[in-house]
Length: 265
Image (cartoon, rainbow, N blue to C red; front, side):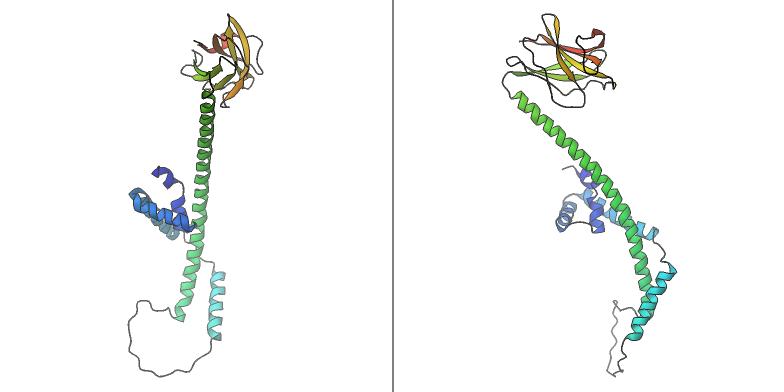
């Protein structure tokens, strides 16, 4: 498991905000017990949230306070008055004393301020989480696409007589490669893992087979698509790539040759 990816996923922020399922909550608590790094990061998120709420507390507008206080006083005035009853009383100190009526208005005002401040924090953190979620989804899609590409390669390599040839880029594409997969029995040709430089909008790479010194057009391909099916050819002695006008050329321009690989066996 990649701990950094888990931390950056935003699930810890969700946990602190309470915007999380019961299953995910158990998962975070379990992970924080197993990995000290996650526990430490969770503590940092909680502290940061508390500091943010305090630093960004919003003063409740006076008209809202007034409406709340008037409602409280109205409710108090409507409460029935019960005649006092004399009883023996032994005072006991209780730290959890219920606030008196005179203090209710201050508690309500503080609660409203806290709610508004917490809401601001929630939406900011929620926005950050959404951005992280989009980034992670993009990574997942890229990994899924790469996995599909690998599976397709393995499927082609498992076909009898399919043989891969690594075409190395020349001085026009130093350090660049691509795979030419050819079946010398069926003639089927594929290109894959194309790492050649990107082409101008009016140009395309074109694959050629060389047989008895003559070039045979196998079609154009691009650098974005993974496995691409090309035209079939029998008796190929080499494969070459040139950069041609978009759509391809009837004959190759050797001054635009990007690489060549010989076929052995």
